[in-house]
Image 1 (cartoon, one colour):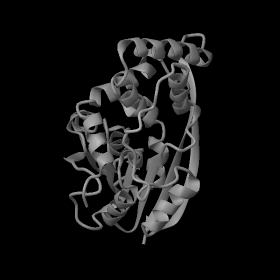
Image 2 (cartoon, rainbow, N blue to C red):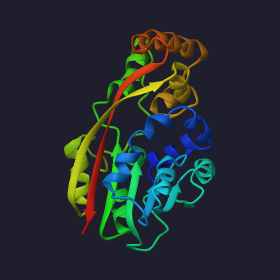
Image 3 (cartoon, rainbow, N blue to C red):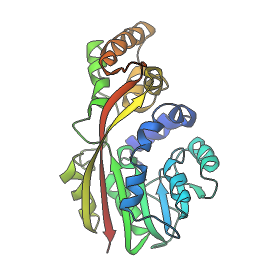
Length: 271
């Protein structure tokens, strides 16, 4: 199994960005951590693998449940922070779709928004399934399509600023992609040979300071960050102007944003 062009782009995009992620988008991604572990029935003594641990949010929560936690990530700077946050977890550098573990060595595998960042989602799910024992659990989250308001807001801002979308932005190859909706995600798990598949929509309001929400793309994170980094200073200033305008309606009396958002959480059993 080899890396795709999309995978190569992800490695470059996230290189050295752990602190920027921790200080911007990590709080957004943290919301489903509890439901994700619940869906995988992670509790005391459960051998769980957290794939794409990032800064260790899910791994730390699993440790607090007295689970036996192993965490992996493809980015060394993420693991540096995760090791401090989840000191009781065993950590490894690993890049999907290859995990450095034998078949069936975990009771559960969880992956929080990881499938949004791999070039071959099907191969990633099959590899995660491989390392779970028969009867064990696998649980994943993704950002859905159409995007929820928190994510769609960036498209609105770029459109208002007249930012052109270049044709060369890396995308998952059509023959490897899947619809980012309920049926698409459950179908992905079904094709990987999983059973008892369930998929739920999680909704919440993300509370964040406007400068923190801006900081993610300003530091090159995500598709908005990739796009913003390609602009000249005048265009970036114009984007910021429209950012301030379009986020104004989401601000509370204290100036914090309340952004409606959503994620799909799917879980299944390993045959």
